[in-house]
Image (cartoon, rainbow, N blue to C red):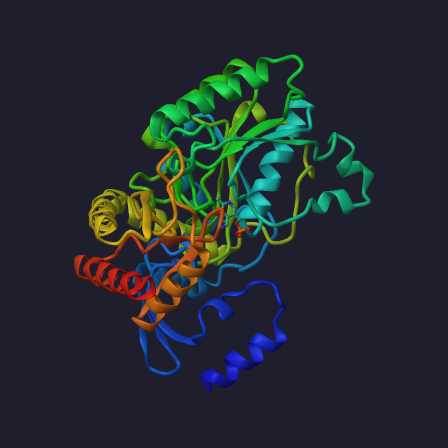
Length: 440
Ligand code: PMP
């Protein structure tokens, strides 16, 4: 039955890249980090729904929260009415936000995907500032919607907005391939100086934007952590110029990077945080949390049918509380450091591994052409064909790993925060074997 399902899905589904094409398996059961295919084979899942499954698949605490909510007779869908489930989720969220942020935070339930929350955050800041453009970064990933509001005819909901506006793209501090030709903190500092000078240059072509949006660790962009000093510089630069700072924690949130939120490493307090993926405890949920001074929306200014689904809120509250109560962010920091250390060791033996980077259990392994000359930063050209071979070799060894990055040559490891020491060892062993086999 597995083969038939796969064949049908590959024909009927759109030709856009789908996971069914990248991972030709038909999962029938999943528990924790393990996924079982229709053919009985078992896989260790390092994709985790692109970072959604903080507690892995079907965690008992999440299932119990969903069952309890179903059995309670609570309405599953109520648009935006106040419910006990929404109240409980909001409490769990606010209890776990950085204290300084939570003290002045408001939450808006968007729905149901990360991209919806990004749109909401930008629109909120456009309303608050009366400006339109935005500052974003090279390698950024914030979603796939193409400005649905632009197509909406209701003038009343469009009228306060000056429109999407121009996006000015700034260099993200990607140390391995730094646009300034130097890696690490030095390259990042040059990047920060560049941003500041550009904004202050009256002929730099930058109209004051509605917001700056960034990821503290880029995910789809190839698992690139920004140095803490650079993040603090972005906070200072935006604060001094009255530019709201939106931090997209869709992928980094809920313990993934070794802290509950990635902003906590640098201590910056954003003006808004965009959250999705893990906050729904495997079900679709997305919110934007923002400082109260930006709450300039009038009633009805931003609505939508599927906002704050009851089951997702129950699953999300259970996940947030479990991560906090069991110290899973700390666990992610320890397990992630162990994985990264072993992968760096491996890089000295396998020249196809050009760079190992990340934070907590968000790890990237950049695959390069070992025969090519390194550039001024010491980086060799990315090798996307090798990356595809490694992904296939991983799958053949029972390991699900996705690719990302500028050239699609970065292996992205996003295991659940509940990964055991034995699973860490098994992932490392299979990965090492796959890279060695694929680069031969
Ligand atoms: N922001 C970030 C940082 C993401 O990683 C993603 C998804 N990978 C999104 C936004 C978009 O989320 P969604 O796919 O749920 O729309």
